Image (cartoon, rainbow, N blue to C red):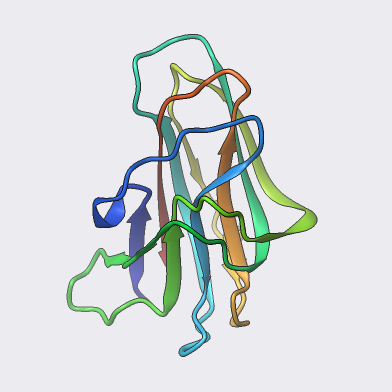
Length: 157
């Protein structure tokens, strides 16, 4: 098994400002060609702007169709001798993908001044099934904060 990472700044892309509605920072889904199952085991959330006292809500929900207008990212293997990832990473979507209703598996309310790291308890990883375009959308929103968000996700295949 190999461990991979992807972040919302890949490919020279820019971070996405949050709004009053959820916006996907990173989507991780099964690729059409490989249909590889994966397990998300670590996610780091934070802001990249001058500190203030605003709230930001982070959400990880199941997704069944890809978004649009963002950047496709190539996940990096933490061990460079491993094969390329079979999971597709898509960052900073401007058109949201299809998120399954009531499928939030992780909800983290934060203050802009604090970063947050979620690490799965062994056996409680977020499983991406080997089903075309199935996976997770890692999203954020805030009615007050208009700065930039940074997210890094780690997963195992």
